Length: 486
Image 1 (cartoon, rainbow, N blue to C red):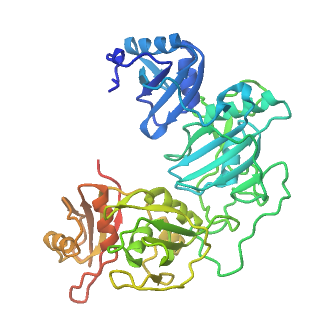
Image 2 (cartoon, helix red, strand yellow):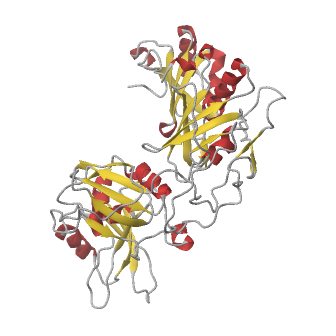
Image 3 (cartoon, rainbow, N blue to C red):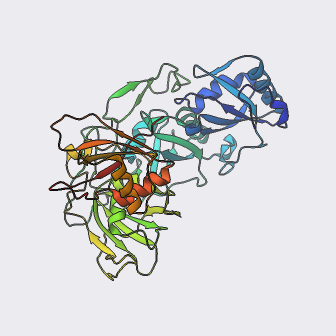
C-alpha cells in the first residue's frame, strides 16, 4: 500500500511513473506540470479527479527519484495544497495511442465529461476550449456518460496545431465546466481527423458554418424542462456570447505569449438552458439486466422519474430482462445513464444506454411474471416531476445514496409501521429514521431513512416510491433520494 508521507516508498520498486495523492478538487494537469517540472521533463500526466490523485510520468528515472525523495523530506505544494508522492507500480502510463509524442502530429483530443449534471453541447465545448486554442471540429457521442472529440487547429503549421492541443489538455484536464460537476478528463484520441456531416448540438465543423442542421421530426412538442432557449447561445450555434469569467487565482489558464488570447475563459452559465430543439440523440433509454420477477413498468418509473419525465415504458418480448424507457428529452436519458448505469437492483446489475429507437411503440404487449402489463403510458401521470419550470427547479439531480428523503406521509404513521411496510414488500428495512419538525396543523410529515448501503436504498425507492398508504381519507408516500449524510 502506498503511503501518504512517502516513508515506505522503498517498498515499491523505483519507476519513472510517480503516484500523486492529496490533490485539491480544482487541480488540473497544468498545475502538476508547473509544480513538478523542476524535477525533470514530464512526458505524460493522467488525472484521476474524483480520487484527487494523478499519475505523472517523467522522461528519466532520476527525475522521479528526485520527486519522491523531495516529497518525503519536505512539503511540495500543488495548486496551493500539499501533495504526497510515491512510485507507481506501473513503469509507463498507458496511452490510447502514441499521440502523446509531440512528433506524432496528432491534434485530436478525447474529452470525457464526468458527472454531467447540465447539458453538454458543441456550443459549451467550443466556448470552453476555443480561448485556449482554435477549434476546428467537435463531435459529441454518448456512451456511459458523455464523451467528445475536438480537433484543434491554429493555421496550417503542423507544430502550432499540435501545440494548441497540448495547451488545451494541460489547461483543462481535470477542470470542472460548471462548479462541482461536468468534470473534464482529457486524453489524446486515436483518430487523427474528424468527419462532420452536419452542424448541430452534437457535431460541428467550424470551417463549414453552412452545413445543414438536423431538424427534429414532426410530432408532438415536448414540454421543455427549463423554458426557452437561453440567450447565451447564439442562433448560429457557436461563438462566445456568454459572460467571461476571470482566470482563477492560481492562473492555470495562463498563456505562453502576448499573441495568445486574453487571460479570460468563457463559460456558459447553467441558467435557463434546456432542450434546444436540434439534438440528434434519442430520448429513449434501453435498460437491460432487469430482474424478471421483481421489475415491472411501474417500478422502472419509480426509479427513473428522479432524472426526468417518463412518457412510456415497454418490456421487450424478444430480449428478456430488457425494457425501453421513453423520457421527456435526451438530457433526461443522459442523466439516467450517468447515475443509474451499472447500479445493482435486486442482485442484478443494470445496463442503461441510449436506444436507437426514437419512440416507444406499444406493440407485442404481454404479461410479465408478476401479472402486470409489459407496456404502460405515464405521459399523464401527476407523479412526473419535470412537467413545469417550478417542478423541475425543486429536483436535486444526484446519484444513488444510502439515504432517502420521504415526504407526504400521514403524521399518524409510526416508525414501526414504516418498517413493517418494508417487510411486507420484501425490501430491506432502514437502520436510522429521522422526522423533520412540522407545524402542529401540518397534514403530512417528511424525513429521512438511512440504509446499510446504496443498493438497499435503491431497492426501497424502486418498490415504495409513490406507494399509497391507506389511512382514513389520507394516503401517500413519495420517496426520493437526498444527499448522503456524512
